[in-house]
Length: 161
Image (tube, one colour):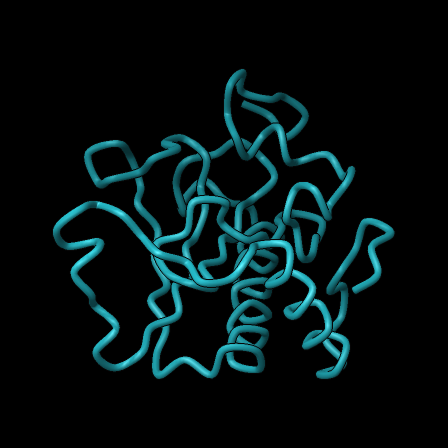
């Protein structure tokens, strides 16, 4: 599949074209990837970085896509450190349905802030997550942190924090 094609029904392909980044929860875009909040977070501050092209493996990425993916992952790490001050961060990708990919076939990374002792009974017993902050408010705080840190391209799409 070429970069110009789009997979029908793929969440990440529908977000690929620049548009209303505020509504789409996109924080930053690069030529080959974009950084966004996860609308169904595992934990407060859960971010994702997706490559723009519909491709499912690390080996299939171009050099530009690899660079943009990891540059945005680093940007996400910096934003989360500034806003949430987590004790740690899980960074991961599930490649393929068997590995747990909710959207298989479109490579994306998860950045999940972690704190010592943050496992609680909700995700363990009820498969439910309690997120104490709205995604729109968190997006504003992350964009403001990017501006404060002087990080490039935080808040693209004509958006002002």
